[in-house]
Amino acid sequence: MTNELWGQVCNELQRTVGRTNFNTWIAPLQLIELSDGIVSFEAPTKFMCDWVSRNYGEPILRELRNSGMAVERVAIRVPEGRPMPAPEARPMPEKAPAPARKAARVSEDQDLPGAPLDARFTFDSFVVGKPNELAHAAARRVAEGGPVTFNPLFLYGGVGLGKTHLMHAIAHELQTQHGELRVLYLSAEQFMYRFVQALRDRQIMDFKELFRSVDVLMVDDVQFIAGKDSTQEEFFHTFNALVDQGKQIVISADRAPGEIKDLEDRIKSRLQCGLVVDLHPTDYELRLGILQTKTEIHAARNPGLVVASGVLEFLAHRITTNVRVLEGALTRLFAFASLVGREITLDLAQECLADILRASDRRVTIEEIQRKVAEHYNVRLSDMIGPKRLRTIARPRQVAMYLSKHLTTRSLPEIGRRFGGRDHTTIMHGIRKIDELMTTDRQLAEDIGLLKRLMES
Image (cartoon, rainbow, N blue to C red):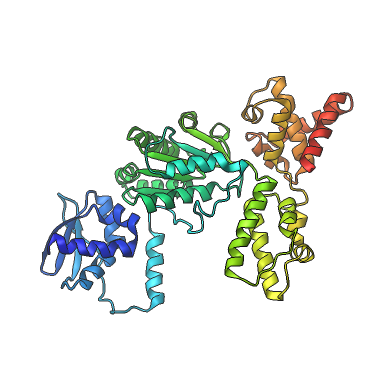
């Protein structure tokens, strides 16, 4: 078997398994020989040998046979070890039924080291507004693939504000424009799972080599590893190794690094060395822009769709929780109008979305309260949520706790978690303190009245 023929097979494999998977797992293989119906390859590590044998043995065998070669099986070994054959594949029919081919592909995808990317989450589908423009610009810069002045990029914000969308968009762009780069996207939970699995299987060196050989590492919801000492230790060393090599890291979380309880200080320090960007809750203009964009897309697919004037503006004003709820409401409205064959009017929207609109009546979030109170009293948001007990910080903190109790439906333990992991008894004390002071402190009462009007407007 010649290298030229193997090159032709590789072209087919790249189309079959995808460019990133091919570059990560198949391209490093070295063709050794074809003898007695066995094609032998060498892999750089035992981990890669095992992984390729288990997950790509059959695709390689299939493409070799499709090229006209009489191959019985594929054997993959490490340079100085014994051959480790892939499971022998049964001869495949020339045209497998479509459902069978799809099932096989899904199975391969489930075994990939990273999480699957959502095809909907691209830069083209991301609506940019004032609350997310810095995060979008930073993500775009990383997606260009060249050296950047900030590493890592740390994106944080509440649920449904676009963190995961931007993470997927970066990965999509890098894979499309820079297919030679090894991009690994996964959640912090998956990182921990693979670390534990490597410990159990005594393959920790293979785990280290895998995660430290990527060009771009993207970890979603990093707050998940807080309190998990061994996983944090490995994450810290992986982080350092990649940064030392000049590799790019992108991290997301639901709060800023310094506000993640039980995250080691050295990791917090490392994460804060790069660019930390807050995705703020959506404002009216951004929500309206998202609704208009989604409506244009849907109208292009369904020419008969008619949306009366004022409907989108009404939804943008009433549904303020997060983008997921907003998009879900619009999808339901489109489906309902299509099923009953009616124009989408304000009355139809109120009828169809009654439950969502009721849930959105108390639309103020704890994060919004914290931000508004911090701005009003001119204190840093991180200080107000953090451990400092100075009076100039403690009083605004108690005001924010008071407003969180009265303007949201969150429980005291949940409010405590949003205030740096404080106990619910601390929240109760803060609320009682403000109740007492409001009877004697006229300025405080006026401040709280003003803040309430700001939140509820």
